[in-house]
Image (tube, rainbow, N blue to C red; front, side, top):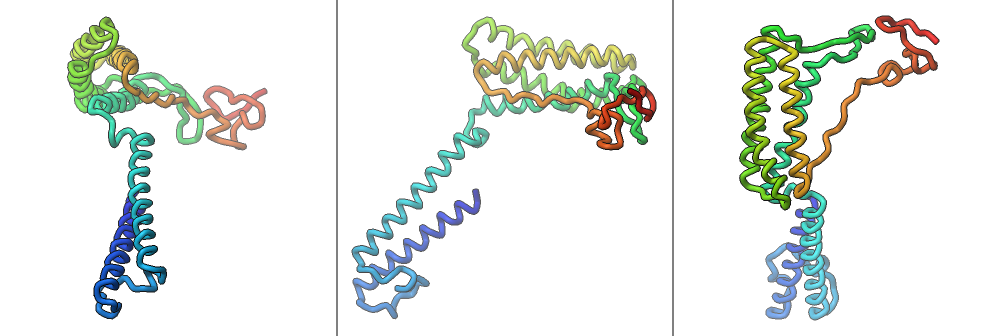
Length: 253
């Protein structure tokens, strides 16, 4: 973008100099009194009337390029010109990622250890330290999410009255999830923490589903664990058409 703007400015300055040079030529009949950097060689040796027409043409091209560029930017990158409501929707949608990350840490997953052996692993298990991590996620992401949802629901107006009513209810439901999650954190109960985070995710998804009837909501990329073939290549069992024995590195047919 900066390079294009600099090019346009350069063209405009060049045109201005050539036009000034033509005017000075007509007034004095001399080129040695011209004090700008433009010279007859730079501006060409065609007649003054032709040079003036060419200068105007170049200036029009520069102006057209400038306008065409920004029209293109408006359609290709709506974030620069989109409404405040759409910006708010984007901010809410981005918070899906850390909330999903928290849910994955509270859920058992098949993950490889340092030597590549897959086993069922859960990152957050409900200890005091783990519960503090959940509390940090709640303060940093979930509570601000609820506030953004509430603020947006009072501003936008959906076409369907029932959808609008539901949209305004969901931020209140999110407060309930936050309170129950706080209790689960205090009790250090990982199953309750997981359940409440799942409800946060469900409420957020419903909210964005309603909003998507009027505003753009980008899909959230899916997450899946790497397979043996993707992780180990020729060193893995799947690469050779075999299966890995659970809990070991041995292959079997």
